[in-house]
Length: 363
Image 1 (tube, rainbow, N blue to C red):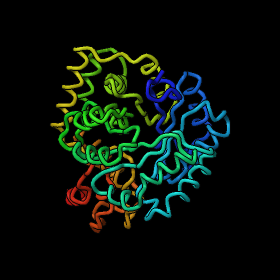
Image 2: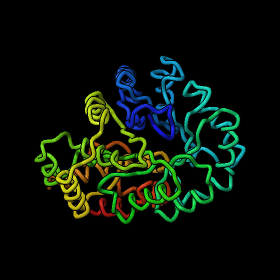
Image 3: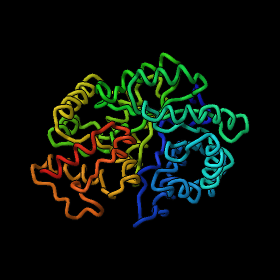
């Protein structure tokens, strides 16, 4: 049983940002089957946000989970995203719209979304943390937390100023563990310092720790001890303050593999730890663009440039040594970037997107 939150079952969470799509809509048949399998195997934590899949993630959870199962059988998390409010008065109507979209009367967890030095003032000026505590008193949420993308110093400031925060969702994986930009280890240590449990996001780094360069993949494949994803999940789950590892499972094969690993996760042994450290070194030496495909950058782009798709194509081309074929991508081209900087202001990875697009256009 989870010592912090007994309502949580198991240490695997279902992240609903990368659901299988059928055209423009969520594939309800596949998603319903995945929900059933997830619950049948003893897990119950689901994570969403209004900005996931243009609001379709929340509605899919209503249609495939909350309308089909008793409220006490699942734990549901939603988030207050920066582009969904401007002032204090916007926040409660927005929360109410999320509750309605998800088909529930309360959220088990409500997170201040993607907190960083770039947006924290917006939340502070709108008294968002205070509003969330008021919602807790009203019974609209059970627990207050944050998801976080910045350095350890900023995290320490936020947790110091908001001691009522109960949980922190961190980007945490073996490639980002010692990364100077992401600072997974340092941020985890700040959480330990403040006595806050950690829920891990991006344990496989947006799929990069599965679909990796051949030279890196062979290091893990030679272990013959499980899937590439299994090493990433087990790494994240092995830290004592980690209570949940979120996985953005898009199909049943991913779910079956994740469930098999996380039903009774075993910490990496010395040989496996050495292998993932070698893989991390390879990643840090590669010129891959560390985009996790969250697509936060896409909605605000005035040129409708499919930024994550361009980066994915360029990364794949670097793996194969071939020239990236961008001709089949829909939307604007890299050369059409007008450098409005909206994408860089919202990117959780702090990527220099406009500069990268310019280099890709020149190439």
